[in-house]
Length: 151
Image (cartoon, rainbow, N blue to C red; front, side):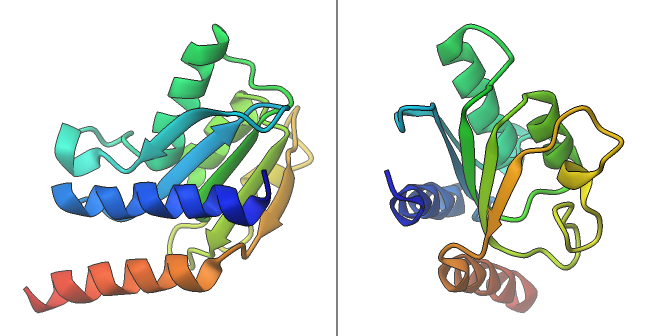
């Protein structure tokens, strides 16, 4: 499945987070054959869980489907550049590839503030593709935060 199609799925998940007042971020994990094996959206508000980031939710689901923590050969597609926690989880899970939409100038750990996933001191470095449907991801986030600043 093309990166844009996968990002469309991630964007739909991001939109579903809005119902619970969560920041609209969505993620999918696909196996080496292109089958979606993990889906996630931000659930911090809904679950009261600080680790309820879309990436973590999707990685957990993918690991459960595969029956182990190593997600070698898998790709994570997420609407927003991962934070340090999520970037660390991507490295720890041995994901082969990371695809993301919008950059996060305030908390991004894949090039904006830090570059955790490409740090040569770590034992694994996934391939990174950025900017896929970034305008849509950015617009969704801007609309969400504009609404929160008004209210």
